[in-house]
Amino acid sequence: MFGKKLNFQLDATKLQYRNNMINYIFDIDGTLTQSRLPINPQFEVFYKNWIKGKNVYLVTGSDKEKTIEQIGEEIWSSVKRVYQSCGNQVWEKGILIRQKDFTLNIDIKNLLLQQLENSKWKEKFGNHLEERIGLVNFSIIGRNCPQNKREEYYEWDQKNHERIKICEMIMNKFPNVEASIGGQISIDIYQKGCNKAQVLEDILDPIYFFGDKMELGGNDYPIAHSLQQNNKNYKLFKVNNPDETWDFLKKI
Ligand SMILES: [Mg+2]
Image (tube, rainbow, N blue to C red; front, side, top):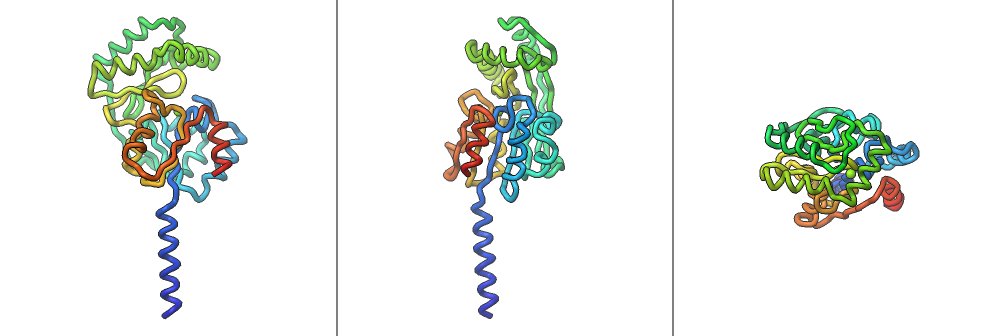
């Protein structure tokens, strides 16, 4: 009798512990990897080990193919869930569990082409408009640019604020659409509300969120903002690069 009661108490404690487990959410570009580049091999070894036994979720504007190129299939399929296209396509242990579609209408497309034409940044490398599941990625310089030009554009954009201006223009002209800055050279465009914050419909407190673009206009802003507005038990880890993420994780 007594033994049974004790067992029940132990199980209840275990359940309580499980319910209080921290849910870790990570952005990828600029947070786990340099933008569009593979994860640092030493950090990869550390991270693979660190995620064991933890509730880890990844959320990125990228599609599945790019994410696997960057972090490898092992990490991609061993975390709890991966939210691609800002949460518009959701994978769990390698299985697609849901997705939302989004197509750019001709008026937005024309506006983007106009921006491409009129931009003060003159070097273009092709692959400017990439249609992903639930999201369209737009880049003035073009996704085919070499790494040095990618960095050059990023520096230039920091001073000239081209991407944020394009985002604002899109949202002013098309109120049903949302646009945000992701990575170094592009913006993400999706249905209003279909931003990274939608992952919070699935994930409960306590939440630790790691991202590099939490400022207004950045693609991590909707998560950070929603956590600040609606959640009680969360922590935001704003990082400038993957090394800072690594430093935080060593301390956790
Ligand atoms: Mg990022």
